[in-house]
Length: 147
Image 1 (cartoon, rainbow, N blue to C red):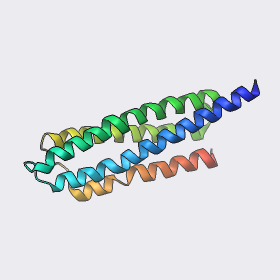
Image 2: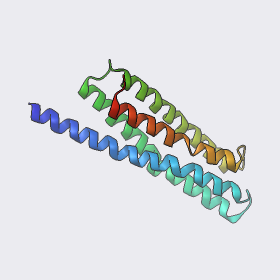
Image 3: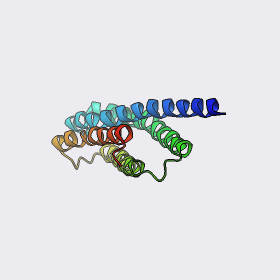
Image 4: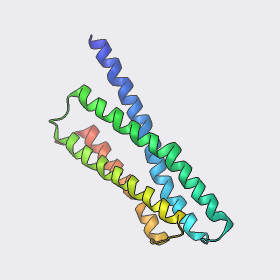
């Protein structure tokens, strides 16, 4: 029975890590696409191409990835029965923040598609740092388990 538990845990962990990588790649890429999109004019021929690229990234990479990250992550937490551990609570908070960030980027893509450009290129470049900081903190929490 222990072998089945070990193998299940390892497959869940592998799936979680794989989809975290996909999700993070998309979260790093999307604000960069927004910068290039904003640099093209709202009426330029490139505008429609940027809208299509952003939509594909959101629908083909980011949406399936966030769903898989949550599914594998929750399955891991149940498998480990880690609900009483402080590091998991902190990790879940950071993953919720990243999920909200994902939602914000999705909403911003819709604004760009409508021709709205409320943020500057500099602000978008700064937004690009959010997932890096969050993932660094999450890795420390998961590996070191400081509390």
